[in-house]
Image 1 (cartoon, rainbow, N blue to C red):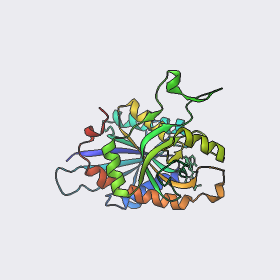
Image 2: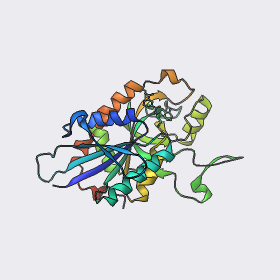
Image 3: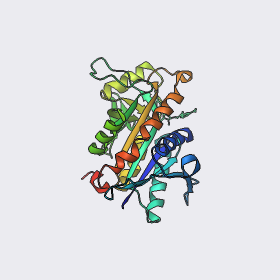
Length: 270
Ligand SMILES: O=C(O)c1cccc(C(=O)CC[C@H]2O[C@@H](n3cnc4c(=O)[nH]cnc43)[C@H](O)[C@@H]2O)c1
């Protein structure tokens, strides 16, 4: 039987624990609390490891999910992800897939949008992981780094895996933006929505996780549950408990989606 190894990266411990609770509640074969704690050899990082029971059919894979709380923002996310991926490879247990998971802000539907936006409590699976503030301000407005001749601003998750996860969770599907600064005004929310009309969610880590995964040739997913609207800052109104509950529920589907999703080599972008 093959084992699929997945690294899930969150920002904070509460998100990590919500992911572990969801995965461990869906037939995981783990000890008390659902996870074994594995210290990485560098950086003071700890993985929370959940081994899912092998499905009965011999051709289907067991799944090991390592969940890491790497810190807030794209730089911390990239550093933690790269450390965990390299440690796995050096230990002879490299990963097949990387997932950025956590809570985020939901965009309201724009004036021209057909879709419903992303309401508080809802779940979104990214079809594009977008760096929203990686670029330069110019007299004519914001220019992404790609227009300055550098790098990339979008990573695309494997479409078949995205479709399978959306079908299993009932999540919405659309671009998830990564920003280093949480939007705090209606004006900035409108600017972002104008630049990214399909965007459903703003969060702070996905692009960092995706850059680290891409540097090692690995596919990446992003799953976000909505704790607050993107717009004027009202931290007291964030529904963190509701979003963490939705995160657990979405992650409960991961073992069966991944076990049914075929060979991990097919998830890589050609
Ligand atoms: O205080 C808590 O209990 C708590 C529990 C879980 C998470 C938090 C966070 O503050 C996490 C910060 C995290 O959330 C993402 N996020 C959420 N809303 C937005 C937003 O509107 N714009 C951008 N990012 C957002 C972000 O990814 C942060 O890492 C607290």
